[in-house]
Length: 414
Image (tube, rainbow, N blue to C red; front, side, top):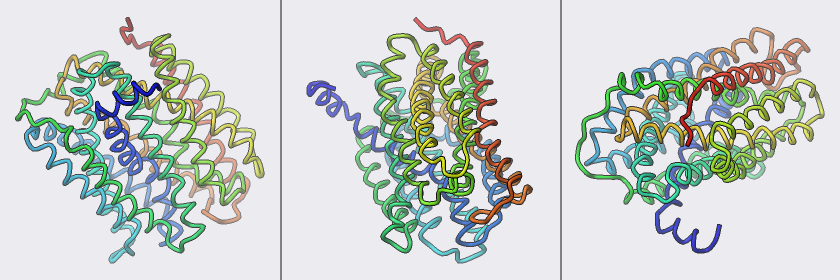
């Protein structure tokens, strides 16, 4: 990026979008990776019970996220205040989840704090992406350029959140508590940086959800996002267990997560450039094929293969950069046409994105437990082989389905 382009981007306040996206991503995927294992290791919570709580929360989201989208569209005049309050709830929930010893049953405390965390996460995400629809309309490069800044920031935020507990654990007795307090400070700083961006042009009537779902392209993009996100949800849910118990490489979790998400962040500009040259559909198909190949290689790994797995993390991480950059940009383009307010549409998008993670947790964690798998224990070969199949084969199948859906979807590329 040239100095002129960089100055223009700062003038357009795109770094504020990157920073806000970084905070949101830090509250999303890493929490699904770390929170269940943290509560299982620290408080002896059942993996099945934790998975059930996460799935129950997603059932709640079926009602909550569309309602939050409706509220987001009607709070235009007070959006800055509402988002700031949401950021406060996000920060407090993170502190409660990791930095405060449960004053009640750990499972109840986990449920309360994770509900607060993801309610705030949903509300902030819906407003953030809806605001992006309006922002991109007046931005050179439009939705793809905004998505590149936003999703690069999001992936860098994931990198920091993913590696922070491991790095902090080398010097501090309570790394998760320190991470939680640091996250709370970052959340408030990001909210302040974004304050000038929230539109205050008065209340507007929301677009009915039925109207969005009746749109063929919007509906297909939502279905594609659901299926395509499922492989990442599966690998994220099982990542820590796979590295610790299948690769027999405790201590490698943080570095491998960092490699994975850095590859995703570093690849985002590349995928945006390729999409501009070859079209979003061809670019996504290429990334999906590469993802299937990388997951397939995992089936042949075992104890001591952490270096080979690191290479796979680089390749598979790069493919995630395409998913997280191009699919939201495509959906935002469609929302600009059929639902300029964006709130209801991104309420559905938020629901789809989170549902895959919860569904993975409620199905995979009990299956592991039924095979006799125990975190940090000497597990039987049958349990380890089940872990490998769940981690590698299931994503291959899901990604293949996503390829078929994309091939059948008309993106109306110019």
